[in-house]
Amino acid sequence: MLYALARPLLFALDPERAHELTLGLADAPLRLGLLRVPRVPGAPVRAMGLEFPNAVGLAAGLDKNAEHVDALARLGFGFLEVGTVTPRPQPGNPRPRLFRLPAAQALINRMGFNSAGLDAFMDNLGRSHWRGVLGINIGKNADTPIERAADDYAACLERVYARASYVTVNVSSPNTRNLRDLQSADSLDALLGRLAAQRERLAERHGRRVPLALKVAPELDAAQVQAVANAVRRHRIEGVIATNTSTAREGVQGLPHAEEAGGLSGAPIRARATATLAAFAAALRGEADLIGVGGILRGADAAHKLDAGASLVQLYTGLVYRGPALVAECILACRKRSRTASSASA
Image (cartoon, rainbow, N blue to C red; front, side):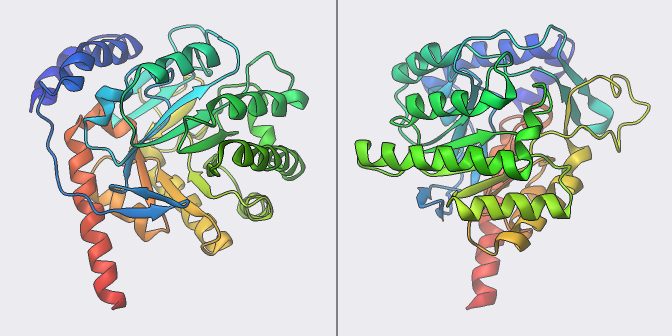
């Protein structure tokens, strides 16, 4: 209810300014429990070797620098994913770089991995008290040559390993030049091979094996899906996050801001993202767990991701349009779907 009242005021502001203001104003009240958020009993889920209180998580990108972990944890999520973090600080792309398309319940962003860098990111995490399931999304600096991208990912994995419940390798943002080239078969195989070997060394050092997930683009064709699935299987990557934002513009043609450069998210990419998710489910056959993200604006959308093969789901753009109540709605829908599936298989 409070968000419904505040939304017209927030939507009157520049989208990035509204984002910063919302997190800033809500941080202390949420962290101190002064704002009431609907809570529902969860349905525990096991995925990537981890136990999740419920299947609904926060997608990377909302809290890029891990500045609001304690507050966001109070919204009822089963897990949070923060980042994308890059080794060195970088400003990202020039503003404006975030655009609303309200008629389509969509966003376009070209943030470009704006990041405070690993030092500040880890300092922020060091000040947080929440100890739930935390995913950390890692990327490369914009000025790192693509042929040396693995160095950046390796540097990030080294630093975040001790604090992460799982680590997501983001090779699918459309807003860093040539980044999606890392999804090609040879490049991805080399990158995942290096990170998988590094993970084994870190596991021995820290006494625990942190799962790795790969975040993919929604535009992959059948051959590309199979190639990515082969690399995931070969290097024992535990999770695939399907999907990142889209460079396509189906469903938003003619709307204000529709031709802005960047990645499209929200309702218009729901079908494309879910189809990619289903394609990975068919290619991997349970050999990695799937996280469905893209176009979840109601509980039924979250349940449909589970139908397509996901074990978990993540929200971002839906929160902009629906507010925190969407979290509880999705938890309930996922719990109902899981119980129905369990009854049918009994």
